Length: 422
Image 1 (cartoon, rainbow, N blue to C red):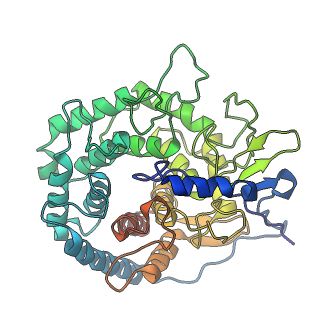
Image 2 (image 1 turned 180 degrees about the vertical axis):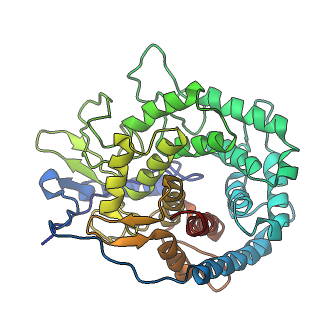
């Protein structure tokens, strides 16, 4: 029999939310700390049986599935149109954060031209916060994240609209490149190559969530391969991966789990902490960050056959699921397993699309048409009013505007996969 135990982790700090959780939540997290510690001896991964073979897939009516996705997208657009205010803002949280991700979701979707007003109004609202230095700063923090999403938004507008923003795009690219943490003298600085929420703060700790959004924006803006920003980013990405063969971070008391996935940062703890017999701790990988890490490696021009990419794909094959954000709970499908679920769907869809393969064969030999499965899953979760909402409110996914945006992104990439990949 297969031995199955899933490692779980604290999920990154999904955009807009993150570590600025309420004091009450922090105290609750501390109270649960002991509960989240598990012994190393308990940890295994799903291992394929020696005789496992790739299982045949049932025939799928791809066009019918794509139509189902398009219908869900149109239904969601009607919902967003209804809740967007006169200023173009969407969502319960003030500022540019959620509105920018809503606009990007539609700008990069197959229904963009049919619902152009949503994008136009949201873009106008977000761009009101553009500063002379190229940052999007609404006074609510999370500057790198908001600047990144806004830059991706501008780069995904229809060409005629995009041409109206050449100076703004250039300024935002310059701001983000300058905001990258890089200490030429202290090369072992674990912040090197990454981005944190605010480059202006004295302590600008790099994390994989912000870094992945910045790299997507620079990719969308067409920053060339020979720009040092990519080489430097790979240094940080490698140090976020649980892969001792390629992770050179020197961390006192922290040991890699060697599962090939990614965590929120080189020394940033997870939802689950593993206490090792030698007194060290390990922070296991989890779904949303592993897909964000894989996607970021691809953006940074790391080749498909690179050991780091293949290690990440190995983790994906052992932990593929659409029923939870794997690694977020101590036990499979535990109470924390749906934290950041819709963000997880969006990172999965983007990463697997850019990886370039329509089918994923998991560690048990099951062949997944992941685009079809993701569409079916999201359609089943859509509310009658066209929205999606996470019952787990961590990282603001209880706000339907945010979860709906992530679902739109996921469906859009799933449709692309079915249309373009083999």
